[in-house]
Image 1 (cartoon, rainbow, N blue to C red):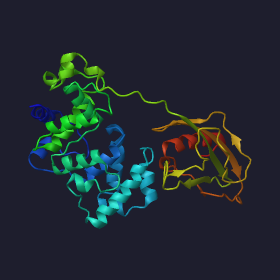
Image 2: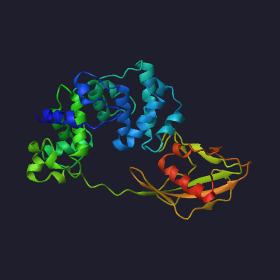
Image 3: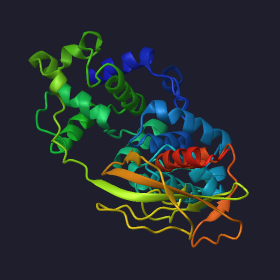
Image 4: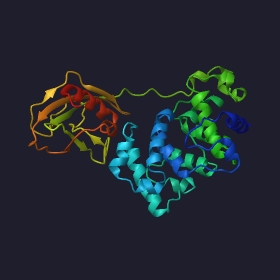
Length: 348
């Protein structure tokens, strides 16, 4: 059986991760902390393991359990999340932690149906938590699993059209026992051996792979061509006061980068940006715009700087003396603009 082969492979090849239980312990009935699995899975949405580990460890140190996270200040959590991207995840993380803490007594539900009721928990995350934290027979389907299954069964229909059939096939492979270890085994296989450039010669299930037999493994899974991303334009303003303070604001909770510390900006539109300075000043424009790519669009952000006196009264935001920690609280696009602007105006 394919699942037995993969579990045997996983027992000796599991990737060490700070939220995981080693397979030898798992076989003996040791279960991972559901809080750790939930936290890691939310962080791993649209993000690589390598990028997540540092953030996971920082969160674990600062908020060691769900009650601690539930009682955290929003600004502290958003600041710790800065740079990880997809900031709606952080907002939902707090909402979910507070529900688990207040309504569930800090105990995570162990079924997919109940997990799906929580903020920020979709079908993949619910299945992953149910399987890995509670060993439920849940079908975990991420991009790595889709790749493995598409190749095992030589599924040539393009994604996302083939997603339903891939889920069905993945479900047939999911064992009743050690479902969590199996889910992690398939994900590890897809992330290492059955990657976009597969190394079929060392794959434990190569003999069972129809795509390898047909010589089409590297072509699968097929994906529909994506539409080109549009480009939007905006302006970021960096105002430095005489005492060195920089004008910053917290973005509205709803919308892109919601709840994050940021520079004041205009709206980002698919046309020339419309000026919206946060205060009256003599603004200078940097020669080159900051470039950043989001999931659905490219952004060209013009950076404008100004020195202002202590009497400056902004229409939004507040002046803050920058510290060594300030850059780390900014989302990536704002950090790019901030770094470019402070270099131009000489902020220490």
